[in-house]
Length: 118
Image (cartoon, rainbow, N blue to C red; front, side):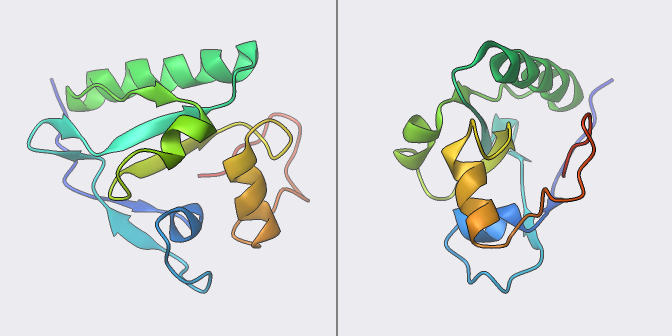
């Protein structure tokens, strides 16, 4: 059974990545529209982050029926600005996560070892 996701509230990171003012706290952004992915999974080239990205891709494919491409931060910057970026990795590995942290759109200070931020 496929779930239909018309929209998903994507947290503060999307504010930076879609060019919104950093004061934006949430944004409603579709991940899938008419069976087509409206997002890319952005991961650094290290083995662990690529594994996590592949797992996310697999789950999103099952849940939505759409394929989410895995790209590097450099490739994501060259994609259409309408695409949502699903960021994988921490600020040391993924430059887009680092930018979000510098712009105070995400805070890793109290994140536990195996924690994650949505």
